[in-house]
Length: 117
Image (cartoon, rainbow, N blue to C red; front, top):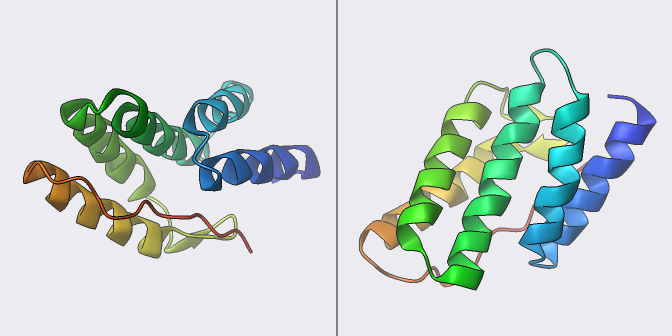
């Protein structure tokens, strides 16, 4: 990953961790449009998480959140446990836990934070 894309990924993660999921989505979408090749699914997977949590926090839309988080699992599950400095294994475990709560119509107690190395 070049420095420019890394800086945009870090900016998106910062927005994610501040629970500004709309802005996170905007940044990731820009990166996703620019990327070609196999890593495109990585950015799209993160984008699905941001969109899902936007649905949850701004629209209280459990169904939309579940759909987006499932898409994220499908995209991110293709990558190594740690990819571009992000512990995807941990993130996907947290996503699965949140999905279980949503299926039971329960609001998650907390949303994950993304740490980049």
